[in-house]
Image (cartoon, rainbow, N blue to C red; front, side, top):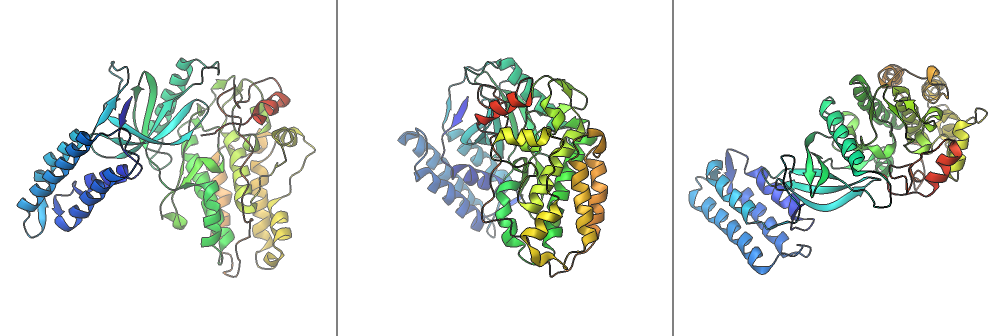
Length: 447
């Protein structure tokens, strides 16, 4: 693996400097703070094992960059072509520890440096990374299989390659842009666009604060609409995500309805119709048929999960919520269990909404979510694209400004541990819902 030596402030400092020098003319007033930020990051703790000589070499390259800029500035501007070689000198001076067992045309260990770990799942770990070629910040997903998991590494490699192929075929803006697939330290590695921001679950508190007044229900629905729209792009290309939940949507920048939403974590995605013998997912968002071995990948599984996500977004709770995974699965599988429709939860918890939101609007909201959450797949929307149509009707019905955001709660409970991808920890694989529940109770990181 190629391990660059830096602390959490170094990557943005390096990226900022590189991005600045991509302009045809670089302003000295902008360049100097960028160089200073990078120089300061060298003095902060966390530069793993960088010795004094290495630090001096980088500082020297930065000083040469500043001298070149000052000597060639005209009216405070420096041509990019003069700075490019100096910036490349900074990159070459930066120490990189090469400890991977390299070789092979797929090895990309010399192209990227790996930084702080930002997440982990059943069979992989995700790192903040940096391209040594162009300074772009990336996310690096590296295969990581526990020795006692019983999962062959060849299977994990195949899953990552499949994820690469799926991401590469998606429409622009649906998921993270995929950059490379290869190996580092002999392990499968996927390099993707780094998506900043928060996942939808962690963003709910912010959304409550931002939308305290005026058309709040419709704005929350607008975020749900973006989630359905994103998944419709996945279905249109012939894939099923199979792990749709609030944690797998990321809100990043101001755009439609004030935010842009992307779908991520395609680790267990499959082609439509493909049969998978394993049972994987997050119980609170899994339809009844997903607890059976050998169930073909069907977009209606994602529709069910989208219905549960919309329910959570509007009410602050999942439709089949319970105190344990066993009870959640039992509620989903029990045809006699009936969840409360969203309007009932909203009007009970927030009686001030009565008379402010038309019952016809609430009734349509209920019908959309109930149809998506039908236990019988044939009663659901065929795919996310079909689900968009009634949501567009809800979006076109303007609600009065007097509507205030339902106070979903001071804290939003996380879903119970997912049935994740490492059977020895928390994946659900077995012949019955009880086996699923027993496996999922053990918990484990999801990602």
